[in-house]
Length: 160
Length: 160
Image (cartoon, rainbow over all chains, first blue to last red; front, top):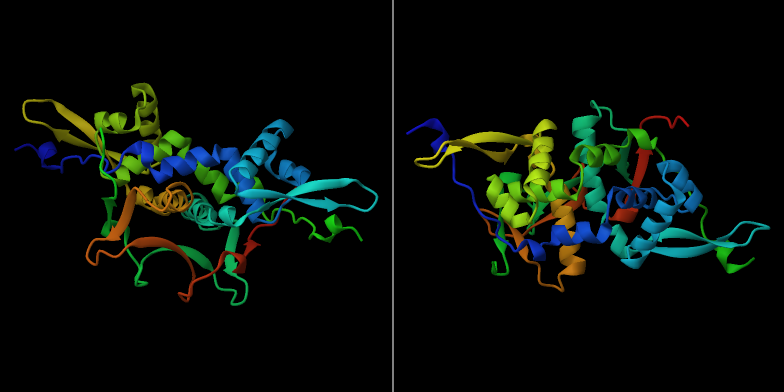
């Protein structure tokens, strides 16, 4: 038997891709700009001009992405007023938006590990303890779970 | 003082966006198709035709995305041979690719919570215990950390 045929055979996806939560979340969030706008909101940058400055994004693209984030319920507008100026809107995350934090932290950790040459530009810390914060995969009983120990189980039958 | 002016002032991003690990990871991975190809590889789908079938993606787009994932080192090719057929290549995740699992799980969990009406299409379980697996934000001492307890600290000075 030749070496190539020793490899395990492929499996098929366990779930109808149309019902996949990953697909759904990606479709809801939109593109890379949306993720970077979410990053700004996580960092506490709330005002249109500040976000635009940070990202170097066009006003029309930023207007579109903010509207989308508000529409899907991950961001909300909040009025503010500088002295002598009219009331304007700034943007904040909703609870639904905060629940996207693990996605951003996951992207950050991968970039820290593989792109930053051991010198991460930003560190996440717990406010009170000052300890570093990181993402972990854990089972419901609280044990750390290695990726190769994870199996996927389809809750719905694949229909095609 | 009017109500709008009560809101906290905005903060500025603590890091030069050009050095941000989130930006870097998004740029490395590419677009939504790349994420879905990664999902297939996590599910153990390894062969070009199977991935193409699952995603309903054109051959040229899939060829491009697989080449990109191999180029950045998150996937690798592996020869296989069906009886009577020529040697072909299938695709597997590298360790660097497995390290993107938290990003996919984060996307999945958000979709499960907000898009699936309480009926997640796929459940992640620990192989031995059968317990459900989930992402958690924890400090280095192992304590669970709530999102509002997280502060970001810039390791590099913002240059602009």
